[in-house]
Image (tube, rainbow, N blue to C red; front, side, top):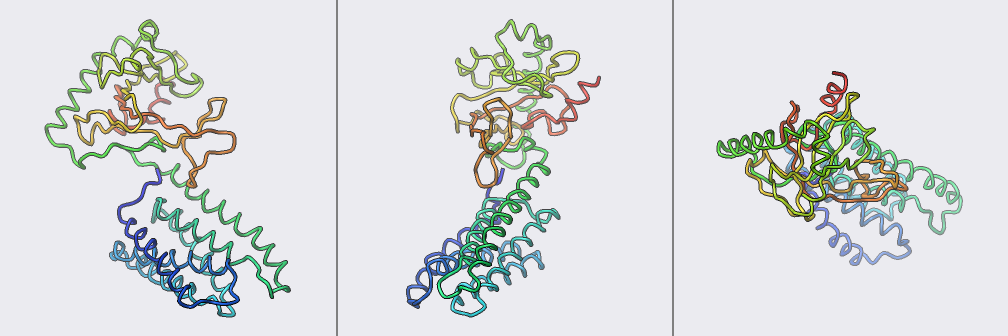
Amino acid sequence: MFDIAPDHAIGLYVGLLALPLALIAIQLRRPRDVSGTVLGASVLMAISGGTHLGLVLTHRNETITAALFVMNGVAYLALSQLYSWRWWRPASAALITMTLFGYLGYIVLGLDTPDQVALATKLLELTALGLVLVPVAGERPWRRRRWGTLAVAVPLLTVVTISVAWIDALARPDTQHVHVGAVLQQTNDVATPEQEAAAKQLYDQTVVAIAPYGDWHKAWDAGFRPGGSQSLPSTHWMNQRNVDAAYVMDPKHPQGLVYANSKHGPVLLGAMFQMKNIGNFGPDPGGPLTAWHQHENICFTPFGFEFSLMTPTATCPLGAIDITASPMLHVWIVDNPGGPFAVDIDEKVVKRIDQS
């Protein structure tokens, strides 16, 4: 969730390169009677300009997007050095605001997806906007109005930007990465015939091994216990003995089982293998078919309610705490659109089971 898109990494590098150059430019000019807030905004705008220009190359096949990056980058770099200009503040505020709304428009229209480079750049721009709007000495007629604008505009734009990015990520998860907040194990892109055979073998062995647990009473007798509320559509049942024994992808000793909480009682959906330590991904016989995943930035309230992921600013909602779970691999024995080893079970599948 909110990973760095490979084609955006170059923007990060160029933006970071712009930082020392902006500081050198200020040092060479030795501006007098220029407030620290103005110089701070100048540096942040230079970084944003560098980031936008860095993205031109990787978007050269998207004519409109590339052109917008060029115009944005040049405008930011130019204004970062024109802080003595009479109209610098309104011009800078207008540019930053239009850039923010332009980005949000791209997100809403599905032309782009949020990633760490874009979100970091937007936060830089929001900070720059705040610095641009801070009144300085000698501007008394505008001071009260400027503070009012600052108090309303920056928090509002921050909330809107974060909300749009968060809602988009929740509304458009990909088929393999259904449960947001999960980080997939790095594998090759396309499974080889050998990996396909190994994945099928793991699936077949798991189906046979957990078949007795179709009766949840037998799962209970074997030491599996519900690990969460059974009022939810599905619940993971964990076996602490298997967890402590640290079995590694053993179909006969899964660390967990997943049950749908149907009106007829628990219905077995699949098994879950889990590694002992965070960051230690398990064996991957099926390559991309059996990639493990690690849930990071999951937010829970003291009452057990799951918010599913942190906000794009890496914070949990008020009253919730952040946890990270060690790598896990699910094997779904029911027909799941994302596949038998998908990160999560499709909610529609669980709903159909409940209604059957």
